[in-house]
Length: 289
Image (tube, rainbow, N blue to C red; front, side, top):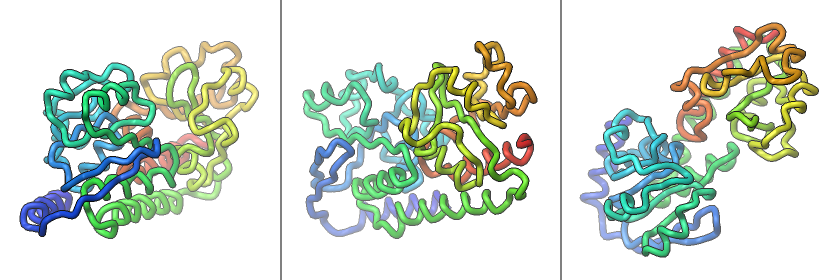
């Protein structure tokens, strides 16, 4: 299906009428003007890479960040660093029509000084994901019904199906989701937290702390979650953290450890959010008290 859509989009680009100039505003409030849909795109955020490809634009990517690994075709592209160490010379050498990156990327001012067109898009909530999909559709000039709305409809249906698959006994399970060591957590207001809420779970990290707050480890001890979700990359030493042996989830070994491939699905706010919901639902089904 994706291949068919990509072919159709390519044909429309080649055979369609002349394009009128258009502008797209990014998350900084900055606008980029396009005379025609960009044909050479660099994406420096995995969720943006995946969203571009889901809209049939994988063939337009000429470079990605080091963490973009899905779909498999992007692994063959030049990898240009990450949020803090993007390869400026490599980016410039690829002559992109536009560079898509996170709002927090340090390289943005330098790329703009060099005359490159930059759009900063960084989804953190479900509403952000819908908005960013719409922005990407505007960049590519993909009609919303065929692009952003179509993708979100699939995500929404898959999250709902994952929720409906869960028995009543797992609802209201108190969950702590750790996205990175320090620890950084996914709160109620993050896209991960919003998915957990739709699954019927209770997030022990409130929305008032922001989407992905850095916590005092004692906060988690006091919150005493029933279940912990964490990636393998961050699991080592968890049970040795001061006081964490008192946490119910640690004491009863109610911890879902996700291998790197699954962690990537879970922490990327893009077209695979339905798959992420299924992974979290399976965890709740198997490990909830």
